[in-house]
Each structure stands twice: as structure tokens, then as C-alpha cells.
Image 1 (cartoon, helix red, strand yellow):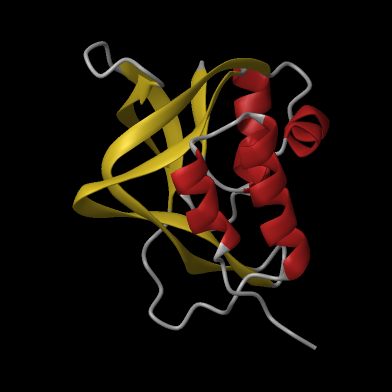
Image 2 (spheres, helix red, strand yellow; image 1 turned 180 degrees about the vertical axis):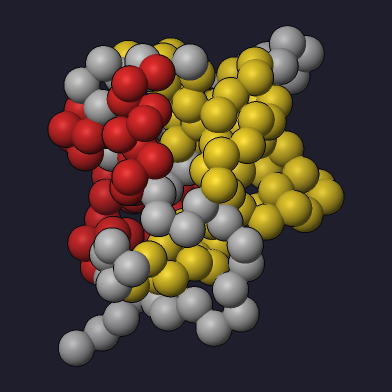
Length: 147
């Protein structure tokens, strides 16, 4: 099953730990959504990534091929998220969509900031897979809890 990671699961080391079956498939973009830290994770005790519909914007992420058993494992990490299927486009291809599983949560108006470790996982994943520089810069602007 194809899974689109746009948050900390872009980090290859974390993804391999969580889902040993996972195999990199491609870097892809999800049109008409925007990235936001708009979810309070009970598991991480900080704000975490979510995507929100917004015409004209896009979210970049990583498509992994993941076993059905590892998707069940992913469910245990994605507290408060629901599975959906969406269409993404592989980098450089705007004509052949790929159906993927994605985790989306309801937007929370007062979600806390991310912590530095969570941001590090996202940014390092984006660098590792070489997502477009313009999008990586967006991720580097994630505000974190200080102190």
C-alpha cells in the first residue's frame, strides 16, 4: 500500500523503526493543501503536523510502499488522525496521479507549538529525500516551544 508521509515519518530512520517493511517509492506533492502544525499529539506532547485544504498551495512528502501489517502499526502512532485516500503527483509528473493513504486530523484552533525534536525529524527527512528547496524552507520556519 502506498503511504504519503508529510510530517515526522519523512524521517527515514524513524520510518524504518516504525515500519520495517517500508520502501521508498518517490517524492511527491499533494496539490490544494497546506502544511500546518495544527494538531496536539498526546503521544509526543507537542503540536504536530496536519494538512488543511487550500486551493493553489501544495504539500510535499514521501511516498512509501508499506505492508498492510505496518499500516496497522502506523495507526498506533497516528493518535487522533484518520486514514484517507488522496491523489499525489510524483516530482516532475503532473499528469499521472498516485492514490495514497494519508493521515489527516481535524484542525485544532489552539494546537501547541512543535518541539525542537519533532521539527528536526521533519526537516531532516525533507533534506534526506531532497524535497524542493522552496518547500524545505517552509518547514524550516516551523516555530517550536522554547525553554
